[in-house]
Length: 133
Image 1 (cartoon, rainbow, N blue to C red):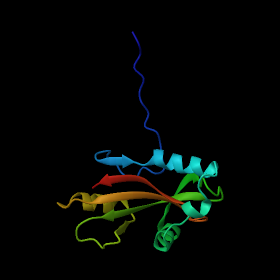
Image 2 (tube, rainbow, N blue to C red; image 1 turned 90 degrees about the vertical axis):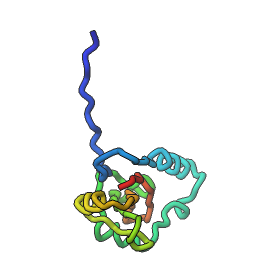
Image 3 (cartoon, rainbow, N blue to C red; image 1 turned 90 degrees about the horizontal axis):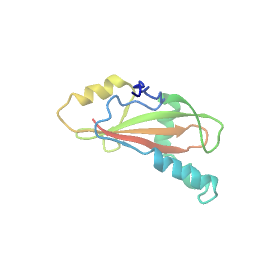
């Protein structure tokens, strides 16, 4: 009779969303972009082009991860969360804490959260997860 093995949840610094309901993970696309960069198919200029506002938020409020930037390898990546939906600015709302996500989750409106990783050194950025809140 085979023994059951307890499944350990993998610790990932980018887990800012508690539930996996309605969540889209974009890490396969991330891996493809990085592989294409390393093969020379795409240039660094074409992927290290984060918007100045995203860079400002990343520098001042980003949550540091243990992951080194896969492009420049000089700095650790930070994560930033934005929320889009009704009665929010057209450019979205930066979410600084889990409590803010929970607050919006209790509202009757439907919101979409975006978890983005950013390198503060080379401006690499990539969407990691999208989730309905």
